[in-house]
Length: 278
Image (cartoon, rainbow, N blue to C red; front, side, top):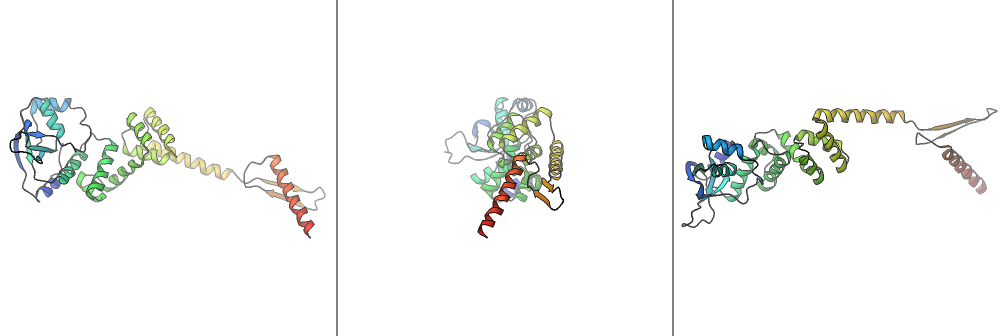
């Protein structure tokens, strides 16, 4: 896992220069406010560390309120997966960079680090972007720069947070992991139930974003064609002696005989009422 070097250096320059060192694992604790809720499967990482060691230092800071006689002196800013895997691999110490940053800055760094991971779900990523935006006043442009993505991608990712909770749960259960596909589902579906139905089709038939867009174009074309075909119904009558013609138009395209009779009776009633007042 790489960190955004220029981002970390910019924060560190406001304090002391980060110094790399080997730190005993027993002297480090995890951060209870760490923004990543689940560490995921650590088996491959643990095996790699057991064979090659920890290749990327974790980021740590002095433990808040630590007593001089305490054995735990540091708290993790970023790198809890590597820390946990190193512990599982039986290591005694781990390479670490100590930074003198505030709690808010530590959370900011942790968020950016986590967002640069490749195994985040679309919703985890969107939640991370929202956290940077709401907790740390990041603009979409600054988020994009910090995590190495395009501004458009950040903006679209944040749109995923508008997906209703049941549809979001269905997407996760069905393992629909493409942000672009999820966005197309949201655009195509009229309500949450339709979203879930469409997500099931995506999962069953491995539909892509282009597939969904093609379907949407076909549906739109069918609606336009249907509107063109549905002309207002018009009843026309010519008297046997050709002395007059009668035409009655309805707004709807299909009219029953009873509708026509009722319309004509209404016309007669109006005419008789007007005559009686004359």
